[in-house]
Length: 296
Image 1 (cartoon, helix red, strand yellow):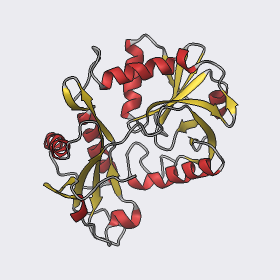
Image 2 (tube, helix red, strand yellow):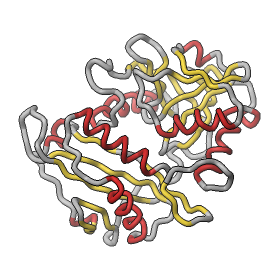
Image 3 (cartoon, helix red, strand yellow):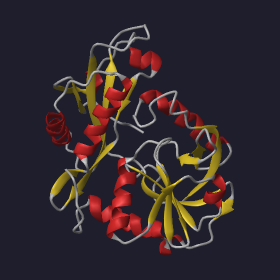
Image 4 (spheres, one colour):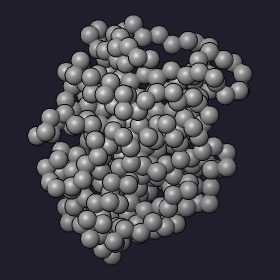
């Protein structure tokens, strides 16, 4: 996929520059050690114009990730939101995926940096998995121990774990992986949180060993408004396999149904599931088509 061309602009440390002119230092800590933080954000073309969904929540989490990783965060978040809207305007993007990245300067030591840089880019990107339901497998890789790294931070280096899990799944003929935590409890997908449906109720892994997804929080909020019981609890791979239905959710993935786990197929119709109901409600929310709260 081509993410930019000769006319594409990105935001780098206070300036809009051509993506083709952007440079990084090959001695940077972020390049060598994965020591950076990032966000994935979506903008939608709504009847109210281009709107960035939950921009404040995403930039709040970006700052939180930096603080958890001891990376300096020195920018005004409201100003960053304004610059992101300007970036979309300059690139003539209405529906877009937005990637802010905070990265560290040149340093080969393992000490925390004293300075950092910020880059924001954007491109057109459909739902990460498209519209098809996924055949997934339980990965042999686990999510990192929360005592080894701050799991609640969106740190670039964490995604080596995700890449390995997804690559393993695809080599086995599956669409995606599901990871367990150190206690063999259900955690999440490589880049998305997970929900399962059983007997008219939704279940999702508790916080502690997973990234607290902004889309996950939106789903829980929608459940309250739609009177759907949603339970945060410890779950197992067997719970997932014995569910009536399941789905991933995340900014890139939005909401995507799961068809099978380790070749155990769900027999309940997706169209009649709570996941499908929430899929419709989520789309209405981000497009501002109904009277749901949208935080800009």
